[in-house]
Length: 88
Ligand SMILES: [Zn+2]
Image (cartoon, rainbow, N blue to C red):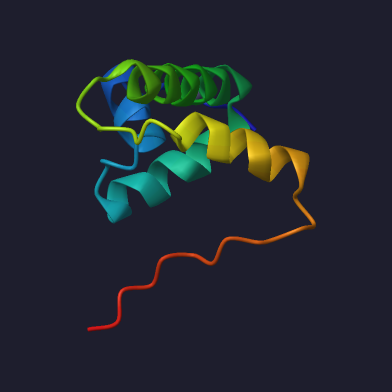
């Protein structure tokens, strides 16, 4: 199965960050199934994005946020924090 033209990296990155319109994303997904090279680009973009989110100072973290995460890792079976579901 040939993968003749690769989507532009910009598009792959948009897909990785969920910013790509869903119809374009569907097309891209089809390409990714056939194209390992582009899958690697998407994966790298996802990792970059994750790193950037961590580095971004915009999100204020509670002083005990890290400790709470560590606690969760320590005692995962102890208590499962419920997902925050806003009740409108
Ligand atoms: Zn490709």
